[in-house]
Length: 141
Image 1 (cartoon, helix red, strand yellow):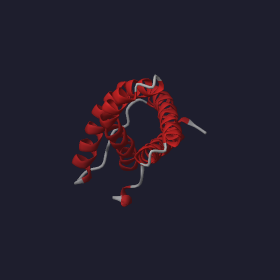
Image 2 (cartoon, one colour; image 1 turned 120 degrees about the vertical axis):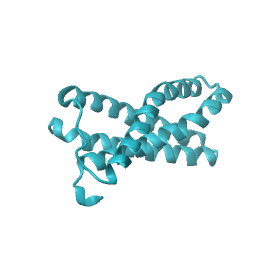
Image 3 (tube, rainbow, N blue to C red; image 1 turned 135 degrees about the horizontal axis):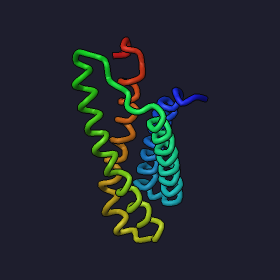
């Protein structure tokens, strides 16, 4: 594996994280607390791996210009800007949310998780979209 493979790895880790978030949400809605805990810890693990891979990639490659034109250009930058802003918020939100759950402060956990989950899910999904728009062939869109 080379550094050029990392964007695909990152998109995969984002998709995995998003999937675990959905599973975790479905589990807690079904009152399956242990399954919820496992899914959310898996989401944290896959997101942590993503962050390490992302930093390694961008430390070596730097930023990648978006060269496409037309309708996809404003779409890409709208998705990218909202993704970056919310991604910056997700890390502290996820840490606080996880910390409250592990300390069994469930009322406080629920209060912040109501915000953390949709933001984190959005960041996971838009991370995959950014990858597709930036790295995949133009005939896809």
